[in-house]
Image 1 (cartoon, rainbow over the protein chains, first blue to last red):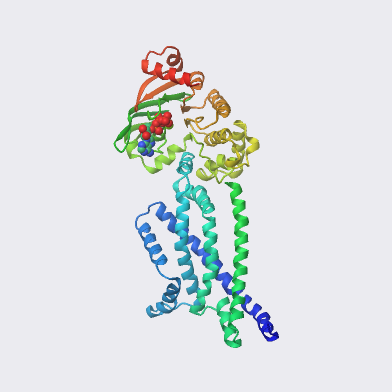
Image 2 (image 1 turned 45 degrees about the vertical axis):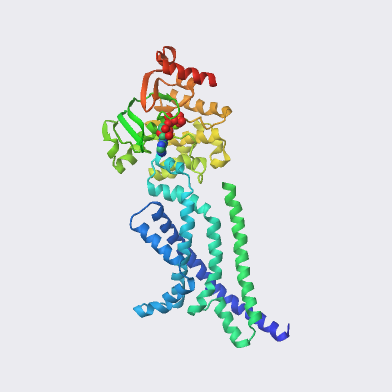
Length: 220
Length: 246
Ligand SMILES: Nc1ncnc2c1ncn2[C@@H]1O[C@H](COP(=O)(O)OP(=O)(O)OP(=O)(O)O)[C@@H](O)[C@H]1O
Ligand SMILES: [Mg+2]
């Protein structure tokens, strides 16, 4: 490896990492948090069989899971302006990633809710709890624990998927790398470098996940 | 205190309760006996609205209700006057023993947390599990879980506690500790309706025996009459069978 290349790579490392910390990570955390709220609501209206809302949830999940994430990004960012709705790249990305991850996680959480034994709910009624109280104090905590592995996986996928936001001009890690490549003409090493940074992020998350899972398993 | 008349319940085409009357007075310990499938569990569940009866009337503390048309609000209100102990304990898996006991106070009745914990610890002490307050259900034996479940039912100071075969899921060596707790409760005057196969408990603790057969009450008698002066051949046969199994 030439000295020039080593210089480029060390120099670019912080230049990629900074948008990683400033954009990729917030984008992931904010989208994931919103997606969890969406997912819990969508799972609950289906579980509780709330008319209309249940059909709405099915419809939303059907659309989101049946269309490519990249296309969803384009519809929201490049398409909506035709209706007079102009969004900045970052909020547009948050909307799409939240809705997308929310649809997948809704299914994970719904399955986990359905796996909570009926006896838990009946015991809740027997001590005088209402349906909502049973949901929030008994069923959801247990379901989220069951859903923890699939939810962690979807968080890890989301970290990687945020790179697609480069297509709608969000300057996250991948976009930052593309810009350096355009200046330095070192695509191979720079793209490997950004790949490694994604790998580090995901590896850390995987480690955290397995520690948490061990703790949770101790409670089962 | 509590009286139901003419409870009926079907699951699809099978009629499970065919018009059952039962009356519970304060301080009663009623044992419900009967062979498997006779409708004992269903009766108990209908009385606590875990199952919706098709017909029948219920009078609770001089208030009358039609079982098939209960208002949601009344169901919640009436349930708060009762406790239920399940065959397989059904402790909340995400809560410690103490939290299991106090949740009916803190969440359902919005009572002060400190006070609830005091009551919770007192109840756990009563069932001999004060030292297990911070254990999760999976860290407790079946007998201990069932005792926590009894403490949970007691915590809200119910007027009556329903027990559905509280010892049937337990290993034989753990049955005694649970029955002991129930016996203690009976002595203190707790009103209890207990579905059980434990004839000794029925004989020594219950004051009234209700024998169910095929969705109906075949006999209701004082416990003494039932066990020492039984005239019904079908029940005699039932008692003989259970005794032989022991
Ligand atoms: N949810 C249900 N759906 C359909 N059938 C049911 C349901 N629950 C109970 N049954 C039927 O109702 C009848 C009475 O059941 P129940 O559980 O009340 O009997 P039991 O007297 O408690 O019996 P056991 O001593 O075995 O507990 C049985 O034939 C059972 O198969
Ligand atoms: Mg039963």
